[in-house]
Length: 496
RNA sequence: GGUAACGUGGCCGAGUGGCUAGGCUCAGCUCUGCAAAAGCUGCUACAGCGGUUCGAAUCCGCUCGUUACCUCCA
View 1 (cartoon, rainbow, N blue to C red):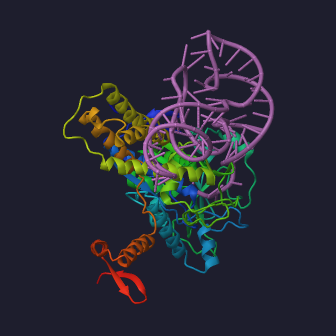
View 2 (view 1 turned 90 degrees about the horizontal axis):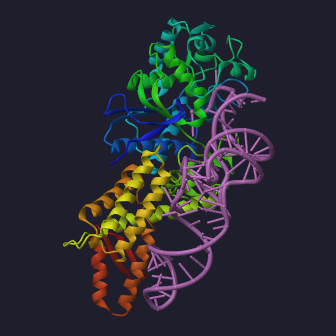
């Protein structure tokens, strides 16, 4: 009954039925964070999007190897005067070892992802740990005549490559337009063409992140790590390559070029999948625009743009309520609506746990059964249509309405067949928990609730209702809490 | 300037040729000690102008507006 999963493939610009190269195995590579700063809402969207894809593929029964890298070397500061390694720059500012900075932000990234219930990838390779593989790939490209060496640096020869391939096939560009529109930037004298990009850069004497290579002490180019690491762990051709839309050009374009120009001779991935950006007041969230919101700020509410704090699950729901290929605009109103919607979905989960199928089935209401089964199919129809979680969630809400009616007795549970009952329960709970990756969040303040109980205790005691007093004491004891009747008042302690 | 998108009701956000998306907000009803929850009902839509079609939010063209990439930013 489940139709096939379709995905929009940037490479072909259309939705395609997903067919793995080597079913039941699926290889998926996603561009991870550059760990030089705090993760923000944009990171969350990419991570959540591909987390749901990962989860859904597993739900469908595939054995997935999910690789998401950590970029800890080699990206330049764009707004800096000189081409200084981004990570090195931060390190200098904070007087730390570069790897210390990297570790610091990697840890934060992991913590925030865990809060968002993003599953860890199966392999999380670091660029700095794969220098040898990157050097190897450069040698292949040199050997194939599609790169050249200048002063200890190696550049990819885009015009030469373009003679036999199409540089720009992913992002829909052609090399002539690109050349016509290239702006002159400094420090590019070594390149034969402004489109050429570095595979290896010689390090200046000040540059402390450096590794030996056949050409110089230096560091790998900025697109190479993904090519080298995806090949190492997933093979020369794998199923899915994901990342943010802003990476499509030049990053992913260069990856394809490198992959073709090396001994791979492939486009690296069969399906290229891109998630869209988060906007704030209609503008892309970006560091240079100064309008980005860190995840820690969202969770704490500590940011000028935030009216309140938003929980990780609210953020996750907010992201999932839009389709991953649409831009998603941030606003307090939208997040508050997301919080309520998320809560509603969780209440449905609790109701379904409590709902029992009666011992004796009544007369099945054929129309109702049919309607309910259609609603469950709608849930999957949304997922299968290019992972349209917005449609899936809409279908879940429609299903929830019926579930609530069943729970309140407005619709008799006995008019369902056992099969229908199980189907709606399984569809709802598995989609919400396993596929969408939403989970219940702890509610309220335990201490405040305890204070409330203690106030009832005090009242009971004052009213000499000793049955009640004993009961409260016994029940709290079960929770590992002892009530202490002190001269100064009533207090509690952990049971020793 | 080049390339690629987008413009849906009070807000967010699906849909892509005919069938109620959904969530939040607001109003009413049922239920109810009060309230909430839940259910039901209602409200304001497809940027504008032309065209194709029996029929368009959906296809085509133009206009207006917005955005992204083109800068070694995930």
